[in-house]
Length: 257
Image (cartoon, rainbow, N blue to C red; front, side):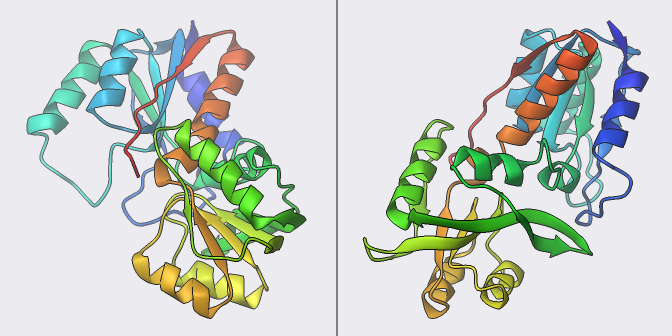
């Protein structure tokens, strides 16, 4: 067993939790304490009834999530919110969340790890938010159709699928960028244009981004919000477990998106 406070302090330092800006409503760091010790870690992309019940079944003492307990302001602790909280308290499970600090981490970050999983070597930054680069970019010389195939295979192993905007079979990807999750936006498309990015890999985005991609001669690969954000929490939980000699497990709860 390891003190919860020790692991939380390590995670806060490792992820630079207090220094990385995040979207309004996101709370990074320890979101719920337990009685003080951790013997097993569970990791999951989303805080949900599924992840909490599975963490309890696995007898985990700490649940590390990417999308945490709090989004969109204060809400009444009734219904499923009450049920989740009661389950956490009854099973003495602490919750630690890391959103953008995990996305942008150079070792355990979703963007760096997804790039490498797709056979790409990150060498630059992408998708700045309040001065912090969240995504990754680089150069390559690969057939775009092969890159889409790798994205499809990856997404399908995580309960989803990948789709891409139209392109010719002979097209090659030479300058790429990755922004996991809801990565296709007005800001990222403009940045792709300004940086001469020819292929943008994201989790998801609004329909209009696919229309705009054609106008920019840009291919967007939508590999799934859930799938593209599985790698970070798994790598982080594994690392912490190895550091402190603890057990850990990955809880898979695909959303289909």
